[in-house]
Length: 301
Image (tube, rainbow, N blue to C red):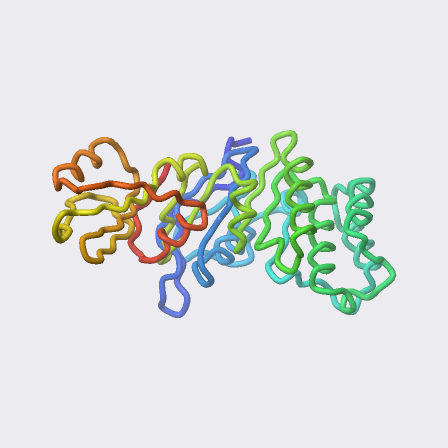
C-alpha cells in the first residue's frame, strides 16, 4: 500500500459556473493526524465528499487507500470510518436498531471497543435517535465510525454539538486508540484549539486554494508577525515576497510574513526601523491571518 492513504491530485471543482476548489494537491502520510481548516464555504466538506466518492471533481483525481475515489469498493469503504457534518442518522430508528444495522453491514466490528465508547459517553440505547440531543447524536455517530476499527478515519467537524468535556474525551480516544498501528485521521474542524491539540499536519483552504500545507510545528516557525516602529512614516513597500498581511498606523507597521528568514530580516533592517518586536501567534491567529485575503502565500513542506 502507498505511504499516503489520502491523495489529491490537481483537484478542481466548479458549482454552477463558480470555481470552489482550484488545483488542490494534497497527500496525507500514513499515521498522520491531518487537520483541514477553512472558513465556512471554503470547500472542506466538498473535498471530503469527493474523496469518499459522494461527489465528483470537475478536473483532477483523488484516492483513498490506493483506490480511486470514483470507484471505491465495498471492501475499501469497510476500511474507512466516516463522520459527516451534522451527524445525520436515521431518525425513526431506535439507537439499538441503528447499532444492529451498522454492525450487520460492517465487514469488521469491535464490539468490546464499541461498548466501552457507549459507556464512556453514557448513551441510552433504548431511545429513538430523534429523541437524542445533538451532543448525543454526535457521540453515537463517532462511536459507530470508530467501532469498525478503521485504517483511515475521516471526520467532518466531528465535535460539533459536543461540550468541552465530551470533545476532549473523543479527541483523546481518537489519538490513543485509532492512531495506533499506522492508522490515519483526516478531520476538519471549526474549533482551532482542538486542531492545535492533536494535529500533526495542517492544511488551510482560502479562496478555493490550499494556501497552507505543512506540519503544525513548521507552520508556527515559519509565520511571523512583527511590529515595526519607524522614526517617520513607514515605507509604502517593504519589497518582500510572501507578505500575508500588512497594516500601518502612524509610525507603526504590523506585518505578517510567511517563510520568514534571515534574508527577509536583512531587507527589513535596510529600512532602519527604530524597533522590531515579534508578536506571538497561536494557530487561531495564524489561521485568521492566512484567510483574510484570497492570495495568501502557499506554505508546503
